[in-house]
Structure formats: structure tokens, C-alpha cells
Length: 187
Ligand SMILES: [Fe+2]
Ligand SMILES: [Fe+2]
Image 1 (tube, rainbow, N blue to C red):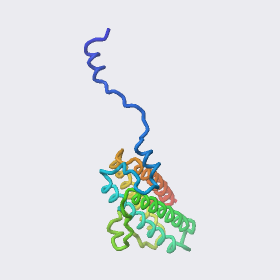
Image 2: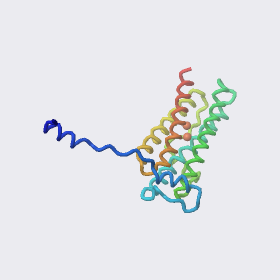
Image 3: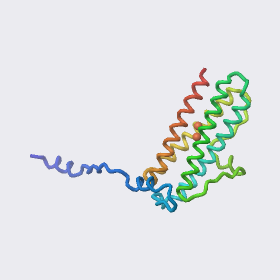
Image 4: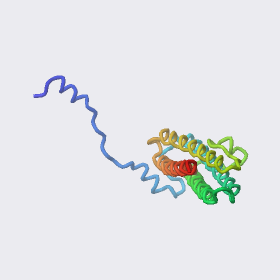
């Protein structure tokens, strides 16, 4: 025998949603290389393309900053760290490529315009010559990237799961970059 208050509580319990695959996202993946691919994110497409272009600008500025640091740190206190700056530069370039590819898949145009790069980038360029100052500048830039990608993941949510997963993967790399830089600062 269930008491009245208990019955009311049972009625109020939310029905659990079923575990189902995101068929629309699977369809996007299936057709993503074909011309006229279905646009799962259609209502949000313009906003997402704009957000991805800002991230693309950020990645490109990060490539330039890491390259500058790699070549100017060469021969200073730690050649090993200078080499790692180049590894990061190449990984940021790979991020830029993945963002540009996704922008095109969404029917947008990737913005590589050099004139507006630093204006559109979330992270800053840096011309420090001291190795510790370089590491600090890169750590700040990585934290800026982590914050902006985290916000992007939350903003996109289920509106475009293909883009969200891409951003989550890039975010994981940025978190790893930040951890490495924190380790070098502590040395
Ligand atoms: Fe990156
Ligand atoms: Fe990074």
C-alpha cells in the first residue's frame, strides 16, 4: 500500500530518457565529404562558423608565437624546450587545419586574412626573448584557449555534436600543452 504523499512523489519522478544514438550526427559523418552535405547545425550555422573562425585566428596566432619562440629560444638555456615549442607550433597548425575543414563542411569560409588575425584571436602574439617569459606567455595563451574552447563546448552543446566533439579533442590537446608549460615553469 503506497501512502498518498508517496504516490504523489512517484508521479512527479521524471521519466528517464532512452539511450539513443544521435542519428543526425551519424548522417553528417556519413555525408560530410559529399557536396551538399546535410547541415545538422543549420539554424546555428552562421554563429558556429563565426565562433570557429575566431578559434582559427587564435590557432594561427599561436602557431606564429610558438614559431617565433622556437627560433629565438634556440641556443639559449634549454634547446629541449625550444624544440618543444616547435612541436606545439605544429600541433596548433593541425588544430587550425581541422577548424578550417569543419568551417568548409558547414558551408562557411575559413578566414585566413593576416590583417585581422591578432584582432580576431583570443590569445596574444609575443616577442619575449627570455625563455621563462616565453613559457609564461605560452601558458597564458593556452589558458585563454582552454577557457574559450570550454565556453564553445558549452555553447554548442547538442546543437552540432560533430563540431562539439572536434572542439573537445582540441581542448584536450590544449590542456596537455598547459600542463607541459606548467611543468617547465616549475623546473
Ligand atoms: Fe591549438
Ligand atoms: Fe595549445
